[in-house]
Length: 248
Ligand SMILES: O=C(O)CCC(=O)C(=O)O
Image (cartoon, rainbow, N blue to C red; front, top):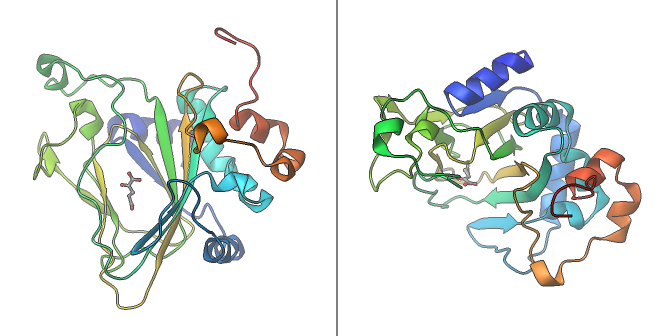
């Protein structure tokens, strides 16, 4: 799929699915790496394991900040000086109840008269690339997305499942596929209804340069020198080493 088409889909639907971004060996590497993660600060374990800023724990996570198809799309949508605001590893276990429909960040609420026209799209500020490390079927819990709902420019109300006649769609896909979606599109994470399969996923959150990076534990944040030592210039920029500009 051409980059232009990907951008068009992001604009029109609020998300795009990119097939075959990761090959089996790298999927296996990431799943083993998740086995070894330990919670820090606001991370948690239980039915859902959730580990933030994994790039800082071990250089093995670095190449997943700028996988070619993902960084090409992020830079085209958010600017050549976009950066990473987080990288989160997920493992949901059988019994995980999923998440209700929500948006992650709404840059600006619009007046009803404008959003109801359905043809005005704010420029994206944040994109999440969701790399699936498990095959995603209805049992393990797909991500659901309401196409076009970023144009509502408001969060969904409780129980609201569609916008302007378009219903939430399950994203059924294979391990190695990546879903890229805007922070303001309505989405939910499905419940893991399997008996024994973990649902593993790696998220990379990209923001425009002026969107703050979310590197917890914030005031006590320290970059891992082993990671910086091997980071490429582009990876260093994604981690925050920008050219001097306004406010610097
Ligand atoms: O689990 C998923 O597929 C969705 C995750 C999600 O809703 C989020 O990160 O905001």
